[in-house]
Length: 462
Image 1 (cartoon, rainbow, N blue to C red):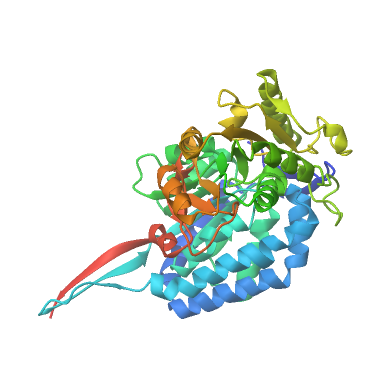
Image 2 (cartoon, rainbow, N blue to C red; image 1 turned 90 degrees about the horizontal axis):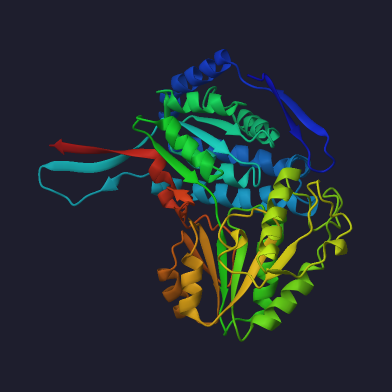
């Protein structure tokens, strides 16, 4: 087995970071430290846990400029957007979960009964293993790291080998905040090592964000152990533009939802269904706005579309486009319009396809790249049927002036979140969850603490 790994930057193909994979001794020491820290941390009063997490958040905000540049070098997002991951999304989610922690983790009271005191207490679940991806390296990890610590659990973070500096940043933040030793740790691991850690009896819960294949591997590694796993997996998120939609608003937001982060978002828009009355105008406006993107060096402020994380990821998305065109789809964007576009590199021009159908992979299988198919529909019934014709179910968005219609459609669509007139956003007050191959479990909101704690009933005769 390899002892080292490299993070290759999609910006220029250089080795941005080279690190050592943990050996068996290091892994054992980490698990033992977490185990030893459990009682200390669970016995720490919740207000003190919140205070430490708040100090850690301050570290991230204070260093957000440096962190933004690291994000861009590691995974290619344009620098003009990278800073928002910390200053907006990360901050918003961490603050919300800290703000609701006392109420969400409080004892659950039951009806009074003469001669008895009865309540349900939420206890920490044990050491939480967080397996985080590269595409939103802080936004995906904060969903579990902060709530797990707030709930009284030690955390071991295994971050993507593409974004290893994110793990080190967490460690620096919690060290500066005064978190007791062993409560937060990180490990750089190979896949086989991850499976062994999951199987260890000192792990109490696994939180994984990544591919469907990765989710299955996590389930297999858990095997006969009686522990839970939160799995946020793939997405093929649809949008439906009804006849009463505000056209300009729908175009602007759906172009952004399709191509932000080069389409590398689990809840990005990957397929669009438009009422046939609006279809010609929608497609025309969508294409014109897409052409305004600037594909280029993500370290330059003018760049609005950066490279994909790897050349192989761009090749995968390009293959879906070519398969669709071979089956009759029409590609509306000329790649030559984007000078930086080059086959065999991570730099890929955005693409918009029409004349598509569900016999094409690009309309049913995850693309995870800057490509989207657009289909006309006759009305709500056809749109609902097509939105549900996918093995995934993370989010779905409806674009309409009719709130009641959106709720009615949302009730029929198999999805974890239904949006109206927005997309590609996580509200920390709401449960983040998926159905079908998009995974199981939930993070954020008061419900996000549920999987990170176990109930203990107190039945006291007095």
